[in-house]
Amino acid sequence: MNWKPSAEIAEIRARAQLLTDIRHFFSAKDVLEVETPLLSQATITDPFLFPFTTDFSSPFATQSQTLYLQTSPEYAMKRLLCAGIGDIFQICKAFRNEESGHYHNPEFSILEWYRIDFDHHQLMSEVDELLQRVLACLPAEKQTYQEAFEAHLSIDPLTADLSTLKQVATEHGFENIAENETDIDVLLQLLFSHCVEPKIGQDKPIIIYGFPASQAALARLSKEDPRVAERFEVYFKGIELANGFHELKNPQEQRERFENDIAKIKHLYGTTRPIDENLLSALENGLPDCSGVALGIDRLLMLKTGASHIKDVLTMSVSNA
Image (cartoon, rainbow, N blue to C red; front, side):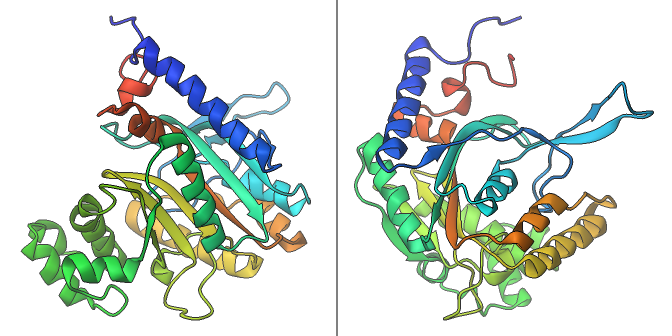
């Protein structure tokens, strides 16, 4: 048994300093730190994110209740926003039941924050400001999702059809995946992660925005171009750091997206997940115009310390927890 910490003491101290710096950053902006539950009766409906489940055995119930470890604090924080709390941030643990690797650990630390009356461009600027503060890096570059595909793959992701994407994927060595794939977004995500991400944001962070509407998640669609969502992601030195939205306020549209996700989960895996009715009820009450972003603390610390594997910045990784 390896009882020693995964990270060196220097990295553990660096984490403490990073968290202090982040808290100072938000305190200076009068953004309130909050804490929300890690366990919930509902969970995300993203078909490609897999939550952990656990059983709650109450002495007052005849059978146990399934609870979910949260993949992010997003839903609970939005309920606070609907209650009128104002600008908020949270640093907490999140859990995703996926493989461990250079940038993945099933238990990880996340920074999430929401700014009232910010659109996604204003929030991009604040993310850039935070990264410059804690990493001492150059200001971030901005590029649309469409521009990134055109620059590195010479195709327009907003107009390319299934056969075109299959051909491009095959040309880049993914014939086995492309051959039977019928979902355009699966191929777009494959090409983006393997053919675009490694080529962007090497010398300074890059913010990619204007993702296809079909990948909107909880973001609103653009009024100028309904083919795209007001969503952005941040990359630096091959690491995906953050995912942000100009938040969707319409509860009916959000319900429809959840239901579409559940149908996809049933088709892909033969299972289902509960929709978060508390979130939808909160949206019925009214979500203020806002933008929010989630940022991986462990990955940020990897960049700050020069670590090549996430276990090198975790006190104990899943392999020796």
